[in-house]
Image (cartoon, rainbow, N blue to C red; front, side, top):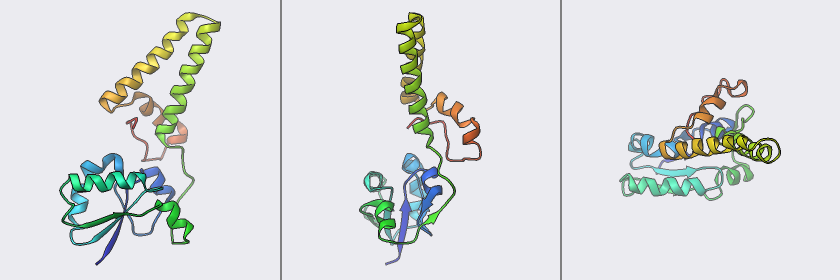
Length: 170
């Protein structure tokens, strides 16, 4: 049976390092993108790959939910690409990996909240409203899937020419 490697990591991770010939379908877009891709894998063995195996397990569950459970043979590669590389199997290494946009959002939001709370205690209590604004933005992002902070960070010079960056917080 022919094998296909399906990589469910995000684009920046895939660009930094991936298995030659692997197919990229990020977990964040899996339910939307996978049905068309999986249709071409019917009758093949699909090896699901991520960094360590956790996201691959989630993708495997979605394969069944999408109705492909009985149409193809799918399994998680235990240990993910970390284990693959540790075993000395071939990987394609891309350019320098950028910090994923989600981590940039976490660092920026956390720094903004911490700084505004500290300044609120020491300088002016009204500065605490900045923390409330950041919190409201994160709640909005969680509810709608649109993250204004991620959109702004994607415009920063260090994120230029990086198609992996998007406006979703998670």
